[in-house]
Amino acid sequence: MQAVDIWEKINERDFEFEIHTVPKNHQSPLWFAVRPTEDCLLVKPATFRKPSVSISKERKINYKEFERVFAFYHRWQSGEPGVRKEASYVSKNTAYIFALIARFEKLLAEKV
Image (cartoon, rainbow, N blue to C red; front, side, top):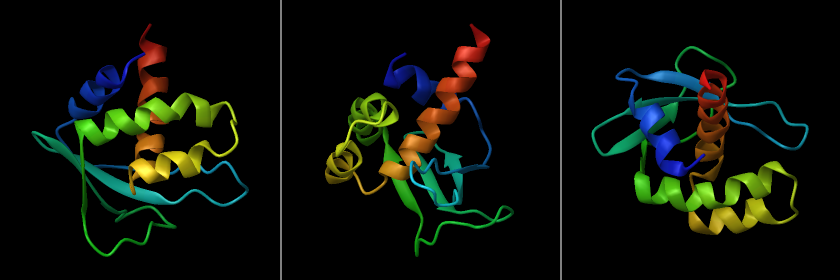
């Protein structure tokens, strides 16, 4: 699966939805809201689900940033040490992007 496939699947939604992070340590997942727009994803704290992420203002994730972080996702998922830190140099939105990839990659796999 490619980054563009997941990006397109996310952007098929024309409404805001809530999703949670996917921590690899023993921390509880944090919820956040995502709203697809024409050229980016807008991320903000969750309204309905708790515990919610704590960010002071809405964040924008464009496709280029999403694609750069996607390149690290499978290495992180397989447990390769240091990948999360490496990915965080590329984007401050890594946790949100990893969560989106995990959720939508699974949805796309179920459709096959």
